[in-house]
Amino acid sequence: MRPGILNHGYRPGTKILFRIIRLLTGQQLPDAAKLTFYRPDFYGSHAKKFTHEAMRGPSEWSVADRELMAAYVSQVNQCAFCIGAHTATARMAYADDAKVSAALSDPDSAPIPDGLRATLHLLGRLTRGAAVTADDMRAVLATGVSPAGIEDALAVCAAFDITNRLADAFDFELLSPAGFDSGAKYLIERGYR
Image (cartoon, rainbow, N blue to C red; front, side):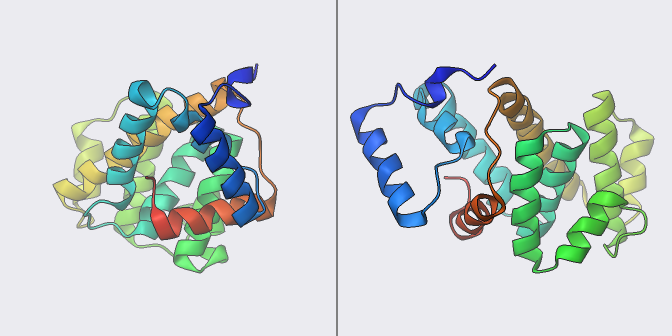
């Protein structure tokens, strides 16, 4: 059930900001962004900082790789809003729709590096089963992914396991393809701040 708080209940300055964003982009502000503005001291500021660091902080993974990981975790969780948002962002970051579609459809046959393939499998196992083994980690390390790379991928997984659950609990409204593309452009340019 969608709580009405996502539609109202913001401070006057925040409401003005939402109107300005709508005027500048021609798109409604996505519910994911609205949620971070509601009680920012409790959730929003912390979530934005954690997610921005996971998705845009220093890493051996490119922005495109991390966006693909976010889309993949969201797909495993069957979170329609986040699948749409992060598939669009991964496509824009890679500038390769076919690569993203193939990786989300079947990582084993997708034209992606072995390290990314093994990492997607690891994130899928963790998301589905809430646990991974030392052997799962060794399989990723064997492809050349560093321990820091695994840690970075696990941070992406944690950020989107949380976000996926919130998106579904709050019944985030799906955007049009143009809305997802507009959001992707913002995320590519500004990140998660």
